[in-house]
Amino acid sequence: MRQWTIDAFAAQPFRGNPACVVEPLAAWPQDAWMQALAAENNQAETAFLLRTADPARFGLRWFTPMLEVPLCGHATLASAHVLFAELGVAAGEITFDTKSGPLVVRRRGEGYEMNFPSQPPVRIDVPAGLAEALGAAPDEVWASAYLVALYNDPAVIRSLKPDLVALNTVSSGATGGRGNVGVAAIAAAGAGHDVVDRFFAPGSGIPEDPTTGSLHCILAPLYADKLGRPAVTFHQAYPGRGGDLECEVQGDRVLIRGRALTVVESILRL
Image (cartoon, rainbow, N blue to C red; front, side, top):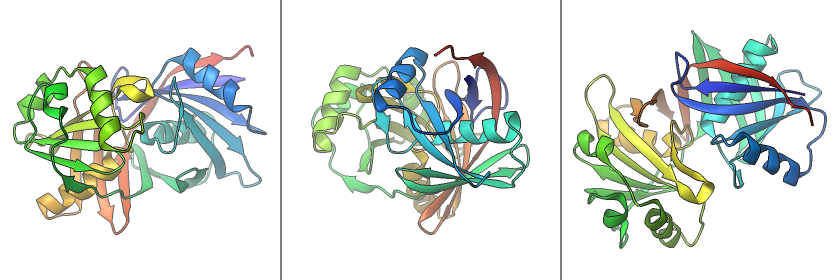
């Protein structure tokens, strides 16, 4: 059984967000086996693919080192890259059947375009303890699947050194006790990209995620509204790596565009 490590939302190695993708399977393994392999890989996500009768349609599930998640952007991009670039799927687009519904990824220039559900956030009061956990008081806080702490100064985003234990407690309390909920810190940038952001998800076993596609289902509609246009560019400023995304809001969907490349091909002796 083969597995690939893909740098997603990256145009060169050691950028963006790595994900492991297991070659398509004939049937889903037991959940415990998939979780164990994800823990062994110790990447933000390991993606598992299921073959169907349609050569351009696959089942797709995502596991962090600690749990299965309902939506993952970078591992979806990585999965499409494996199917297109490594396994030679000839179709112009691939449909993935997931816990978040059908997700379509198509080739676009040197990269790919994903069609994801929009998750517009609502503005909320600043949760108690959030400023202290992040290390800086946000100017606004918004909530959807994740909490979003908005700052006016992009330099603050790059300098954050949050208390991850406290941050997980705050985010869980602010969203009804779901410990896998993460916290994003964002600011309008205006230098090469529209927005700079970072994302912390200690409850999912991910202290900080290098580049998070699903997060931008929330950030894209937020900033499309703030900027007054559907297209927004983002840089996720993970220290030492970082990734770039182009997003476009189309009704209740978000088109997320980025590149990917293979850095490892391996054999699983399992």
